[in-house]
Length: 348
Length: 79
Image 1 (cartoon, chains in turn yellow, brown):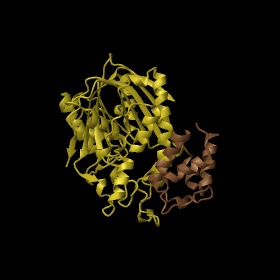
Image 2 (spheres, one colour):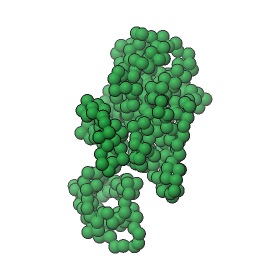
Image 3 (cartoon, helix red, strand yellow):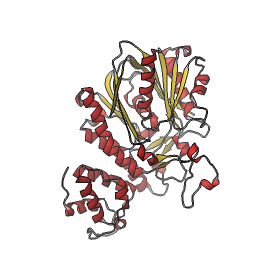
Image 4 (cartoon, chains in turn green, cyan):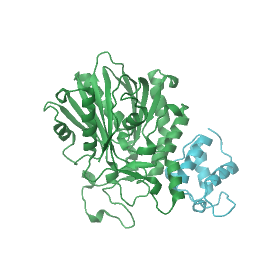
């Protein structure tokens, strides 16, 4: 395990933005209602949010961030660092974080970093920005995590279409000498990198042409491929032991943790992890039904849609855990206190 | 972990099959005859994990030809 603690950092606010466009799995197969019902029962996803072709993850994140800064009454000039975590950046290069900083009107002296991570990306991003700000003592930062992963899925891919959805999120981070420590754990299984992959477009397979379509396949090599059964088996076998490691190493016990917020992969995976950890299902919020799997955004989106009350998240001990692409798992134990949480933003 | 018993395992497998008519399932029954789609396979792997305490190695599971092959894979996973 890779256990580490980060001190003097606290989350001040979390916000999320989704496309207004809803796509229902009830009409996934217009001619087979029974099949649609069975699919929804298995994966737990009734509705998904799908971005238009001219809306990027960065756009959703910027909307979420601007709303959050307004609510917190933070000046844009106060932001010292921004991390953008995504697997659907605006371009292969340059990274999106500098453009985001510019579009938001952040300071020229703001540090800007891009992180290529998906399902575990929120916790990875939180560990990076927190450790960076803790060591540098920079005062205020923004963690932006989002994906428009539906833009990478073939319109013929009946396995992936009903699962994935789009969202962008923003988390406001502040240096505070008296903040309680965040405790992280991460595990990687890099040998299984092909389990979730977009094969072309990077330097390994940079060529892009119509020839990328393979005979008999319904997708091209610039689109997402996922070995669903392998990812499923990985999730039900590896996540619960990883979470138990973090809890045991932290000297905590499950009963003292108020909420366990997992990456929203699918219903059966969440149920399996919950049962293996022997935790009360009421402590495991889920946004799957109306928002599907939004890649790295699922954890903050679930916080915003399922736990927010009157523009605040509950003061609580939280365990957040992301898992998937890489393959990778990352989790964090932390305390929430007075976290501002604006209403969900819907982008036309 | 629970030691698997073959007939009970076959009964578990049968409960996930989509059979067009009642048929006898033995260790020689081809997996293809069970009519398992990806959702059934997901539920089956989960059920095997819950019953016996082992997640089947998915590569081997996907390549299994007969019911008996899956039983052997499970036994090896539990060994």
